[in-house]
Image 1 (cartoon, rainbow, N blue to C red):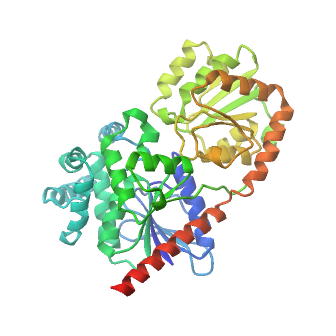
Image 2: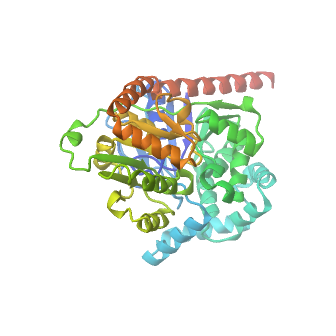
Image 3: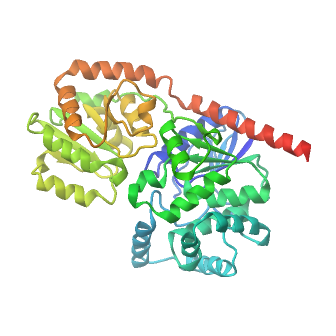
Length: 467
């Protein structure tokens, strides 16, 4: 079975859980004999691993795999060039592009943009040639007029880049020999739908996060429209939790029988004990790790800290991550006179990430709306007890964690204080949660995904027989 998979980030260059999830899922699928060609927008050049092949948009091999997985099967990664940035909205994209212009743009890229914009002016929205007009028309019918105009009416917008990605995917893969398409989140949906319609291949739309999750009541209606277009056009939708499934049903008016829940997994990690042994940190360390955005609730983390510090003085709250709310959060910490109790290390990964998970006495996830929350599984894998927002998908699969509504800062503060002052409670939480973690590996998720693939291919075969 050959699957063309579309995503927009992949380790080590990640800004959230989607890239981590894609890495775990694709590795497990490859081990079970699925041949995956993974397409992403940007070339970084240092993603080389033994079971993957990297190519640029022209098909030039950047890194040959040292070894294949499952015999002749391996994951092939293709970088289709587009200026797409994970989790960016229109305003953030404009700011990023302004920075790029200040630093200096590549002339050859601008020539590509001129070519793309000419095609857009000719009316080929989400299609690379006249044969893709059906996809163009469908997008126009499903997306709002405002979204359509934003996509085709402005130079160097976020939607132009989604369009660029779509054009390149159609150009490169319309004649490729694959069995089905698997697309991750909204930036890839236009390309996936257009390609599925052009090639008559089944489409799986994998939802890791909704625009309503990321932005709440201030959601971007244009992104929301493309998201709705993608899930409604797919043959099957995969949600990372029942929480997310209910959100898709509610926000996009989708029938539940079209949506399957496949929880994320994790590969167990060895706890790095040396970090704890040489611990030079304060007596208690409480960790927040994630994007510093509305969705993740960093402001609630700060307010909770203000209620904990009067009861536990030798404590450090580590708020690790980057995002649009970081300046406001830092200012609030200063207003509350909590500077000596806070550390802002920014975005962390690798050894620094391992150290934070290893030395933390408690991991807190106060998310306002969390489709899953894979960082909580990582914390548990490092023997770090967790406090989870009830508004999360991971709370469905981890029973041995303390759970609280994100807005209930008094209750959250009480849980932190009790956890830090009762080591036996933390030990019990970790031991029981580790047992649950043993059942949440990527192999289980891969088996569910393969069953979805099989179902769609059997259905397609039957329809071909009827015709």
